[in-house]
Image (tube, rainbow, N blue to C red; front, side, top):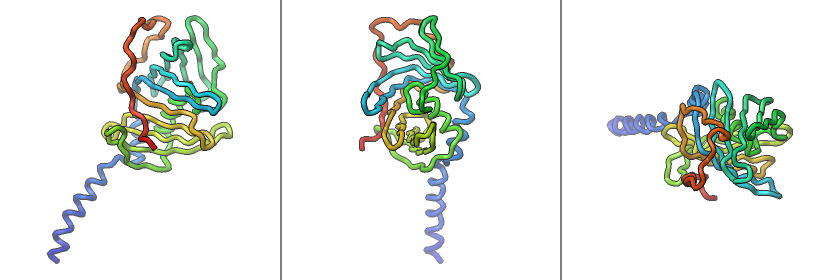
Length: 217
């Protein structure tokens, strides 16, 4: 009887530690109630015959439009996009606008990869959820899978364990990685950035800080 009395507090202690881990429904609720955020995003895009790296400033707005401004590479810097939903994608550069700019496969291109990642986080339950550090930062990993335009899309996203801030994500199309997304300068509740056409970048601006990536395989 004394042994049972000794081990019972230990069992309750371990149970309490486990209960502190965010559950899948808590993570979904966090993003469903998140009003907005701004972040610098780096996207490595690989479609087999071409691999490109983009950088952009992204503003997420739960009740309005998402807004992004490409900052690199230089030939496309300054292009903006406004995403209002599945069927509303507006590209803009200076005074020119292209309303019919939706990517052919939703969620697996640099243009809409972040938008659909956020949709997944706030609307879906992950197939798997586990803990895994990223560059020494305690993190949670969520895996989602679904179909878009006839393509099987799998998303794996790393969030900080404390605060649930996005660190990085991978997007796979039919088993092949199409996107590697990394986040930095993450700020919740930040205002939408001014269009780059009204606020041009100055030459010699400092490079974006190094971003976290998924653990090396």
